Image 1 (cartoon, rainbow over the protein chains, first blue to last red):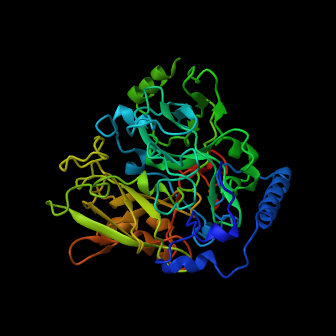
Image 2: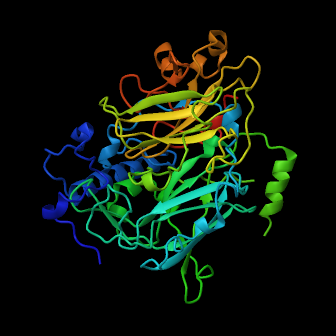
Image 3: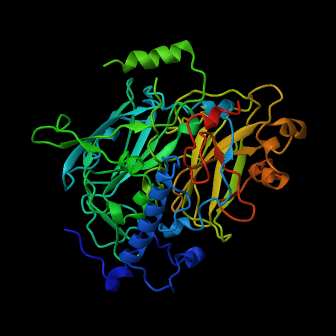
Length: 295
Length: 202
């Protein structure tokens, strides 16, 4: 399957954590520094995790989002705000979302396996779920975008040059518009694990990137969906930037045999909860939402 | 109804470039058309270096202050202003939108554009605003701006360019760090401090 990254071929791998030579800010990837190992990183990840669990025990509130300041993901060091986010009440435009519809997205864009002439390599899968707001209302008619590596863990992006094969029949990009009950559904190929250069022998757990809109712009999120039981979870600084286990678990899809299609594709379910809405909903909106909610 | 806990965000990573951009994503209307302006700026990290892998989204009212609810942002017909756009920065960290000056959504309000910022190395999206620099009176009355100290307030007000466009830079960290907003009662780490915190000051 996937090749081990070794220091000899590391120079060819222009991966997640290296900016290209043409970019002067390569300095902050600290090339002169002795190569950090997974053990170094795991120690840091564990120390942060233990401190968090102690704080929880002492009565701190559970954290539900990734830490913006999470040094084990080295690229975040200079890219997180150091000042507190400033509390604001959303106003006017922020209480609405842009409108997307079938003019914007063709129905076939939700099947990532039919975008080329041939069948892509790998394990065919379906991922389906519902987009809900924090009050449990379905987010209907909204845009969902996904992108991912192929079955070998390779992204079709010029900056991913690691020696795993590209698949001429797989791009790894999909879109859909949620249904009246907030449902989205994609047919795709299960992505492979992906090596990157945060530290020596760093591997990302298999994941699919998701981009979501709510009914209000303040609900906008971009996130990543993972697969159950991945052995790379404890080692990955991006997944572990969410220090709370329950919160991390919310990014892991569930295998769902009722979604599995006989002799065709394995099914996964993953529901996405956006933040609570701040707008006072009109009766019609609330009615439409709750009406479509009944199953 | 019981509140559900939101799904965590994650970084947009380095490989959104073949997925999120699309033709005319940053042209809310055709460049050069009547009323069109350029909104541009540069995204910087905490060392003052430009960031080559950030992507910005804007969402704004039209020039009359109407909140538009029209589809067609992804497949633009060149005539319909949808109010939403997306721009990836180039190698030099510069983004560009073609848009209109937003109008005030209520009489006397300070017009602004809502912005979401995504980048490799940025763990979660950040929200902020870009205010038009004119109408000092409206700016002075604005609830957000009046809650900021003068140095920080400057970071969310665009400069007017000689050609009528707007320039507004994003500084993720350090000197002149842009004011980023929390609408949901999150702390500096983007973590909820309780469901009601966001609405407590209403």
